[in-house]
Image 1 (cartoon, rainbow over the protein chains, first blue to last red):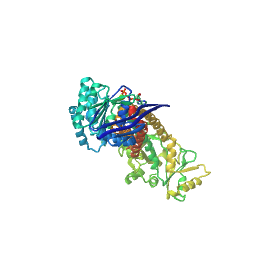
Image 2 (image 1 turned 90 degrees about the vertical axis):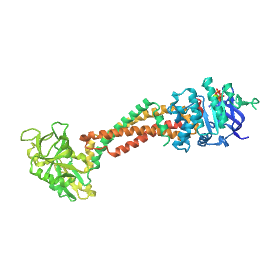
Image 3 (image 1 turned 135 degrees about the horizontal axis):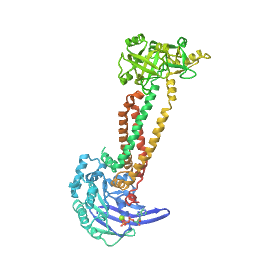
Image 4 (image 1 turned 180 degrees about the vertical axis):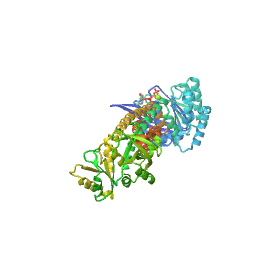
Length: 228
Length: 382
Ligand SMILES: Nc1ncnc2c1ncn2[C@@H]1O[C@H](COP(=O)(O)OP(=O)(O)OP(=O)(O)O)[C@@H](O)[C@H]1O
Ligand SMILES: [Mg+2]
């Protein structure tokens, strides 16, 4: 079994003044290459915190985090940034596109950090937009696109550098049912046909059904037993 | 520079605000260019002052006359190679605003001591032949459209003409002069001392100041001391200075232009610092989620810092280029007042460095803020 994500005895504490709150408690988790995991649980249970650790946006207070073969809890800030650029694509609830850039330029953004030529960057961004079905909207600014279209641009941006892992925090949280289904269908295609490993936080049981397996969190731990 | 489109788009994120800020900086740099240009023009005459020359005035004051009999005595001081004189005439043409620095001289003595003044030999001869002859600076000739052979009248704020009892002095233009190395000196005129001396109602046999050339500039101080020693305890004690010291002293009398210019610009740029700094800070604050996204995508803290600084640099350099460019266009309009044609290039260079300093000063804090931004907090809106 080839694990892309491997967490062992991970804890996360936040200190506010004298108080220290532990929001993740000695957590173990393995995610295999090609998996599509839905992470569910009540609000405040630590889903986003866990996802941020997997995506290398944050560091654990304790324990090991190995993702894509790298002990990312040990990387320095700049090394971690470069690691993210190579290995992780992020998709957020509110799309987080650059409002002043066209869809095309938004998708090209991660490629600025690579050594690709301008022509290659344009080409790759167009391919990514084609995959999400928005190649005809390349010149549009985010405010000229619907929510679902913006989220698909965000998916294209997450995909464009061909990352090892896609990390999504409530990607359909702001979309209606029909649009949500389109976006989820797209993620499922990326997983099934392009072999992308996906970790997705969601509140929505229907959304979770698109995943290969579901994990449930409660009060900072993974609830055992409900997944194979 | 592959980040340029990103920078450019970011800069124009709020068009109205960017234009307003841009205009403020443009105006500041226009002011900078004009004021520093004028300042530099004034200092040019100090820089151009000849080290081989001394100016000898009355010890009492700059305007106190000296007897013409001093010429022989000064000429006999060891180390002196030539002595010429000049007299205040205070002339203007038709209206006081048309000030014309007309100087009564002995033209041979004068050209010997001030060889930078260039006059065609036949025109020098014409001046000597014509009692009321006038040699006019090239700038003034074009300004008034005068021609050689023309008769004009200059009004003196000092001397009354005893033939008709007025202060109007008729002149016949017999030639023009140029001044090598300093165009601002081409705004005057020369005429025969004898004309003034015979016709004036008072002050006969006196001159305004002596212009003394020395053989060895390193000896200037000693020679100046010797001249002053010569007239010590006489009714006409002198004060001898190098031309540079004299010019500096003269400038001081007109007010410390340098100080005024720096004070005004200091105030302008101090205000600008807050204005631009505030704009940059506001723009970074609004963009926190976007900056967090850039970091999420793998832009390092250093890269984000540089992007914010580069944005501020771009803003300041564009505005400075426009402002200084305008100053360069408008500056020649001051030619008649200050006599310098082009905005000195060192003003443009110093302006560019001011723009860089302004950019770093106003972009510094926002850049630091962008650098310190923690992704997970920014994404969660904390
Ligand atoms: N920077 C922080 N400082 C203090 N507490 C924090 C911080 N980040 C998260 N927490 C706390 O950690 C707990 C888990 O937060 P997290 O955002 O991971 O929850 P979540 O499961 O994603 O919730 P939701 O479904 O509402 O998004 C919450 O109680 C939250 O208040
Ligand atoms: Mg969350």
